[in-house]
Length: 95
Image (cartoon, rainbow, N blue to C red):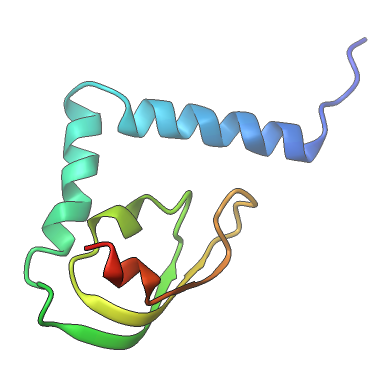
């Protein structure tokens, strides 16, 4: 009998499969990627929030689409591969 895999191994494999399935190729992947863009459509660089909290951040994909400024951007998720914690305003300097 095979031993049970560790939870961390399971979580890593699940996350990789999720990313590949949802953000890889095909129409569903395109629509999911675009949904992040559509959520941010009404914002631009002139919009600024001092603190942003993203609940259910998954693997942090949405941050790539953020158009508005911020001083702090907090991501949280039950998934251990989520980049937990705060991103500083350095992110804004890149845009």
